[in-house]
Image 1: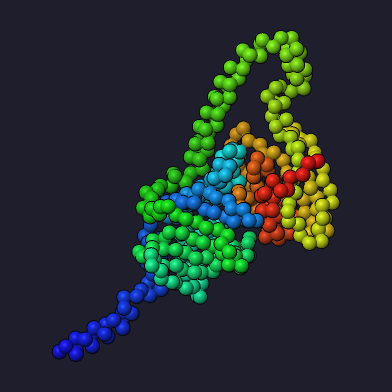
Image 2 (image 1 turned 90 degrees about the vertical axis):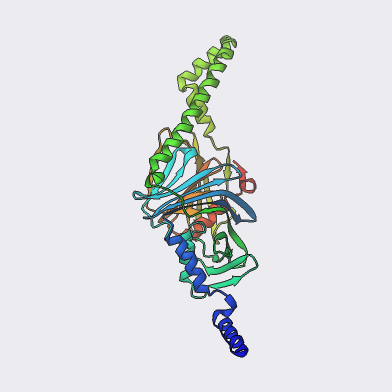
Length: 375
């Protein structure tokens, strides 16, 4: 009887693999947790490594069944906030500080890997027949290929789970096995309790309008305080004011002078056999803009100007997709890339450059300290 009992125990251990879980079971558990979630909210930080610089964002990603998404990214260096919103009307990239939004008819987020969206992570895992799972002391690590059409250098990712297959972090590697993107989740709430109205564009506009009205009230208070001081300055001040009124109001003059570009930012990356053929400044109603023309094997034009805040919330239609750069989100169309960074707006257009080349040029403008030149 003892021999039979021992034999049965050995056989049971062999059949169960000593309790070791199969890869398909682990992936199945992760998939089930996603499919059971009617809505979720993920919070954490994202780091992007570019040109030996690290850009850090606070991140909040929300999802509601029937393809509703909202991703809020705040650059922790300059507090620049952008929101990617997808609802039944389309895909938007909202920049509250500029009171503007790009609107896309896009397949985002299905058309590219997204390291902060659960369905995208699962899709990458299931699409990779060579996917591997490694058991660690504190959990599991899944390695799978990724799909970043605008950055072919990004080739695979490592997804870290705890022992219960709860998501902890994602690392995206380039073809030199260097981490380029790292997302660390501080909380994963698979019972978000969200409703469709949480993904309404109007709701974002209302919040932005409240902040804008508060800023206007603060400015009015400052102007009221300054009026008493200006009255004591005498005749010279009045003469100056009258001169200004002949050309523009003080507010218009201040706005125009603040929109003047005193220096030019040149890209660190230029395609081979391509050179800067012309650089000019053009006056506009609001200030000026810089136009850089590059000629040679890959012709392109780069326009720079101070980013203006729209008086009313502005929606700009774009026939393309949102693209994540190191320090901002750009709008990509067939032959152009548009984005704002560090108080400047950029417009890059070319019929010769691929999207990946345009993104590389845009990324090379990120480190303004090394590429600013005075004209």
